[in-house]
Length: 246
Ligand SMILES: [Mn+2]
Picture 1 (tube, rainbow, N blue to C red):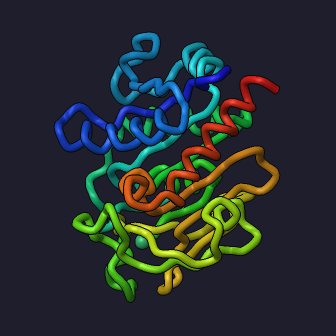
Picture 2 (tube, helix red, strand yellow):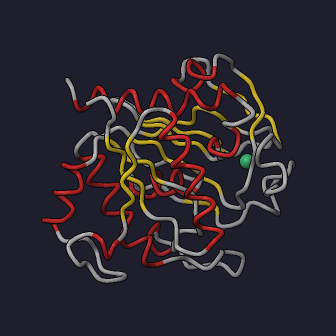
């Protein structure tokens, strides 16, 4: 299909969420995707906080060529086997309950995946990994810098063998940063494709998987000024297109 359908879980309906959501939609559409927003109440009447029924989950997996998991609130720590620390942000249990089974089903179906910020953390949790609930006491460079989201805040070192390094055409670059948590123990099959100068994973890739890219930064905010970051969306949408026309 020329314009592959990319499923994107709904970020939220308030003004701020809609602005954040618009950024992903714009980048995906510019890369040639047709975006399908996914929300619990739009999928077979599944109620807030409930897991998707097997039947509706199946139809969503069938409908979408690939999925982008967007940024958002901290994941409920119980989902990776921890008690919430006071520093952990308020989780959105509805999004967690909706997105985690969706991501696992997408992994099962080997759908192309692009996981951004919270999305990358969710990817790690979906594969059995854990998160650092607050990196502020350990960080040596700024990781929460909303103001410079269109440009960059810190350096990242890329694994030269990574898809990411291939797409960005470099083994070191600078990225924006709007997170206070980080991937800790890695989920099964994941490896660190990029890290920050203070050693936090900034990108993940998945072994023996057609297309799976997780980034801790926000390429959707950098894309307008940094053409290289657009290539991440272009490569993802291309993988989705190829998924539909084998
Ligand atoms: Mn960062």
